[in-house]
Image (cartoon, rainbow, N blue to C red; front, top):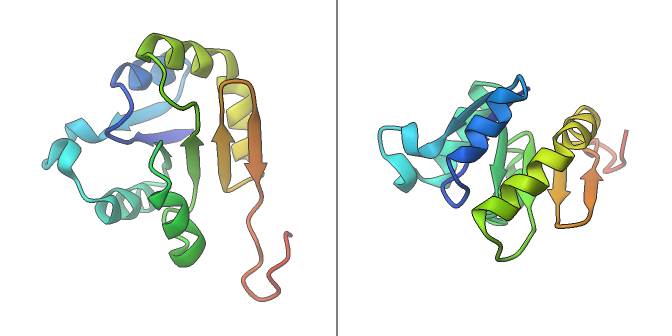
Length: 127
């Protein structure tokens, strides 16, 4: 799976994901670095078929309203150390991948994963 890691999350997350066999990039590697606007991040993620990983709930609003980004992993762990965050990811990466295969948004908390299936824009129902 391909991921785009947002600015509030550590670059080490890219290392963790790539060592697990995934393709991951961090916003710090973009020309504007961590100042890259959310709209540019979302558009680039969709163009490159990447899941945005973020703590920024504005991406969820954009996903619901504009369907951009198409796929999102929302980190809802609250304040935590980078070490603890990476441990949570390491423990749940396979479960996250499985959920992302059927859901467009996954919320990851300290002790829970919640998948949100996409809705059919015509009917508003989950397919």
